[in-house]
Image (cartoon, rainbow, N blue to C red; front, top):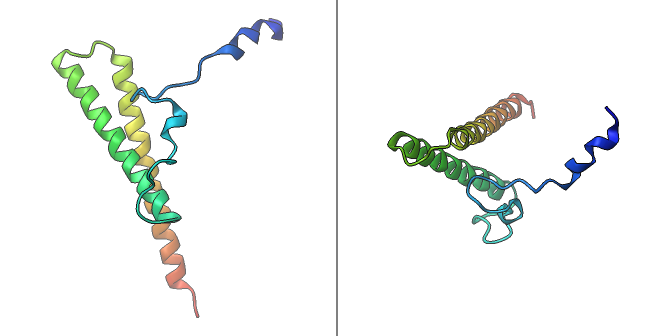
Length: 107
């Protein structure tokens, strides 16, 4: 298969999250959390995790009540919430390891 046959793939539309907002609108350019630097990043991650979890819960509830017919969208919402939770969990583990490393340092 020649490479030229893949040219139509360059005109794909950008991905849109399940909430319906374009990816550019998800940037924390509007009101950042109270704090700066690491606290703002951590707050943004936690808020994103809460939103993803709420979206997944609503999608599963809609599927259980028969309002949602698209299983693919529900599974994507659950996978997104799971990935967000795993990111928060890994961040917590890394921070705990860093804290233990600092406490082991001799001054």
